Image: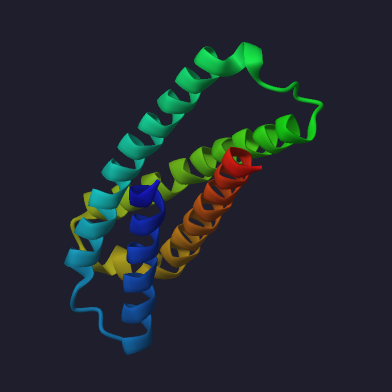
Length: 138
C-alpha cells in the first residue's frame, strides 16, 4: 500500500510542481517516472488483492456477515478497490500512450489529465487504506 499511495503522491507532486514552475524540460523524466509507477502500481495492487483473497479464504467462515456493520465496511472497501482498479486502467493506458509517442509534446498536453488521474489514485488509495485500518481496529 505504501508503493501504491506513496508513488501516486510522488507522481502527483512532480506533475504539480512542474506545472507551477512552467518548466517542461523534464518531460522525459516525468514520462519514465509515470511508466515506472504504473508497473509498480499493478504489481502492488495484484499483491494486495491476492493477500485479501487469501485472508478471506482463511478467515471467511469466522467473519461477520455482510449485513453487519463490519461487513458493510468490508463491502465498501472492496467496492473502492474495484473502483481504484477500474480508474487505473485508463490512467495506465494514457501513460502508455504518452510513452509510446516518443515525444515530449503529448506529456505537456496530457499533464492536466494525468494530474487529475494521479490525484484520483491518491484519494482512492488513501480511502482504501483508511477503511482497511478501520476494519482492522474497529
